[in-house]
Image 1 (cartoon, rainbow, N blue to C red):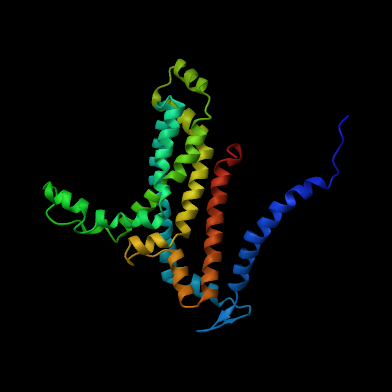
Image 2 (spheres, rainbow, N blue to C red; image 1 turned 30 degrees about the vertical axis):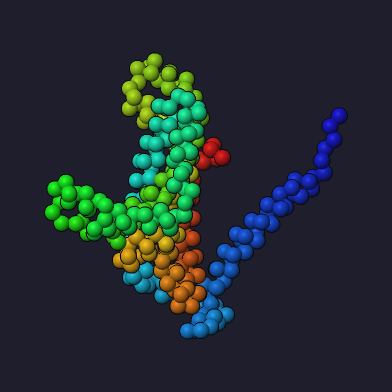
Length: 285
């Protein structure tokens, strides 16, 4: 005869995780929201309730241009990482039959993550520079007469670094979705006369939507909050919301930076909510 646990036992079990969630997520976010309404001068935070920080933020044309550029970075990076990540995951899941070889190739994909993001970004500078490896090779082959100026310290360099850094965040969840696909479904589609393109579009992609959504959430949220990549790879010629917040903090304008953080958080949450409405990622979790 089984003994029923007291009704309070489940609440006791979730208490440690709830405390961690409260201390390390809820409290910091509430602190940022409160500080965003503070006033400040050149040296002090002045506890108050003012809307000046939000008014200056939302009425500035520079702010709107920065948000648009950040969204552009996120959108372009998302498309590139999705195409590359889906292709790599498809190759690993459907063209590599050996589980051992799949594991080895997957580990090879993770090798770049064994080094710092900064090191990986810096490695592009001697490759993309005016007198770098790529320009030298193209000139030596007679393809170009003059070095390509857009390769480094440009929006192109920023997006390239993002794709390099975050493609694996798209590969992993998509690959995880693909290996769960029942191969009998593909065989049934083949028996029904479906072409490879029809199988990809009507069978594989719909079943990979949860993985695509999870990877998209990872990539978009990370890119929208990034500032190091933009600062390093653009040479100060591009801007992002994260970089704008760091600049405000360096000037001790913490309430302004907090207001910017709140707006960015709302934008990111709206983006994530839209993705969750389109795809039910609970199937993947």
